[in-house]
Amino acid sequence: MPDSKTVAIVSCGSYGREEVLSAVGRAISLLGGLERFVSQGQRVLVKPNLLQGADPAKCVTTHPEVVHAVARLLRDFGCKVVIADSPGGGTLYTEGALRKAYALSGWNEVVEELGVELNLGTGYMEVPNPQGKALKRFLIIDPAMEADAIVSVPKAKTHVLTTMTGAAKNLFGVIPSLEKPSMHARYQGVAEFSEMIVDLNELLRPRLQIMDAVMGMEGDGPNSGEPRRIGVILASGDYSALDSVAARLMSLEPMEVGTFAAAAGRGLIRPDAADVELVGDSLESYVVKDFKKPKTKSRVKGFTQHRLSSVGASLAKAYSLKPFVNRERCNGCGQCVRICPKKSIVLSKEKARIYTDQCIRCFCCHEMCDSRAIELKRSMAGRAIVRLAERRSKASEGK
Image: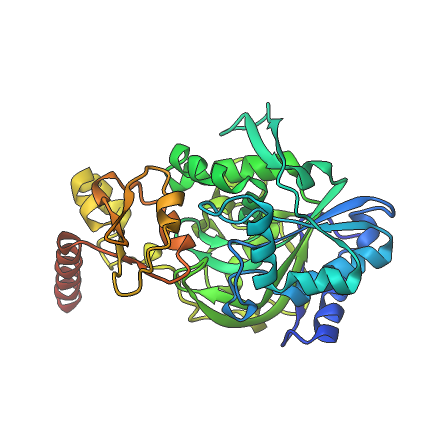
């Protein structure tokens, strides 16, 4: 019988209904079947990646066919299925906002066809977390606390803060929408934020993770990247094990992913992921070698962010990417104003304006801007540092 760190890799070349259903079913079978994770009669929360709702072709959300396959298999097994998520910060957690986001993501059709429940309630509760390393209590939406089991259905995407959003980061969606900015304000660094995410996963302990990696997102995810074919469905009983495999498919080292590094630091998984067992199809056959990382992970040879920190905090700050507003694209919707945890964004003449001296580089504004009006750039001083580093690197190679 496979252990919890087993990851199933199953080829899936399209979002055709029967192909997806077959791939998801095979992945679960390779892990020992649904009976290893849930029981008949249990209320099971299917928790996809919603973010803010988007056309499935944009690869921002978990594809509805993957949600359909997971919900159908659970329903047919005899579980009471509820599909739920809380949109990203800056979006009000109201019935109207949920209806809109679900409709945009194509999930309404799923529940209509299968007769399962789609959560429209907006309640949440405070949940103690005495064993937490970073946080001792969470606010969590009701469907997550009322479920007997959670099945997480993440999307394979890059992420400008944590490098990748996968199984671990997907659970952040059970935090009510407007609570998310306060979490970013409290946990400003990648390491601190990732520790909080691991706390959340250890508290709720999803039974099963099934990742939509048929089409992923590369570049500046989780909202402003570009779709990229990977061609697989992944499944595992362990969030960090699944994320280690997803990272490698995206040409990332697992330790580059903040949440994986936090889990490894606690001894929950080996840093090299050598304790992860692969079953099913070949990992190497699906690695996308030129998968684009987010700009926040870019490195200039001979002049990395780590080295800059030893030179001086002011130099490091100048080098860092910052959010800037593309005024031609900005439609003045105010989403970035609502989500900013430091309140460093205002609307001026119906356009967003960012006070970068107050910015904590959480990139929430970039993540939630549907018009892609928030761009990540370096300041003039930062670009000068890059040019200097490149010249030094070339001179060194010429010696």
